[in-house]
Length: 224
Image (cartoon, rainbow, N blue to C red; front, side, top):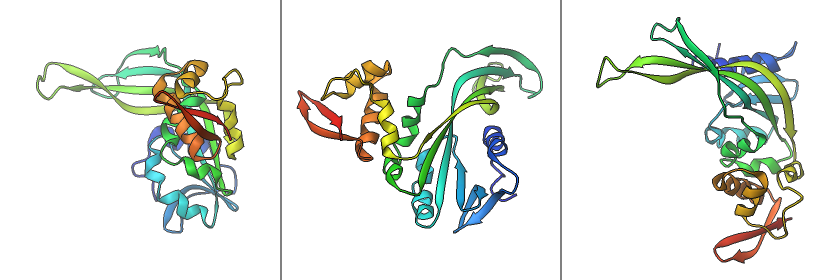
């Protein structure tokens, strides 16, 4: 089908999970291939790289309602497969747990779209399996290394819909002082500073936060 040649296993599984009877899959709309068309709504599933949508989404939003679905793995199992791609050499659970704030790693590419009345963002909190394949090292043929060769959906645990900028106030803890810095937000969220900087950038772009000054070199923010 159109658009499925380079489709990953995770993307295909999410598309089947979201599809309903009567939906049309992989349909060309305004020159773009859409994952799911449901009546007047276009559903796009993007597992990563929101930057690739910077041209597509604004053009579609001029005439259509668009729901962008993005998965975040709350739990992940890592399966190692030998070079024959059939023999499993081990499986373990990753200690890393994804959280809703990880959304901003991708959303930083197009935060302004959140304010568009035709746009809706849905985060699918999932359990997934990461497949790592063994392949020979080019320099030393006897030495083998592991690389990610696929992601598989195990379960959709929950979904969170963020339809308007006001829905993003949830990312600002009530315990924060007013005004606050990105570093103080990082401490309140218990996440790294670099992620908090992406959160404040996105929320400022969508009109949720306002800059009210500086404290030394750090910008000060308040809720708009």
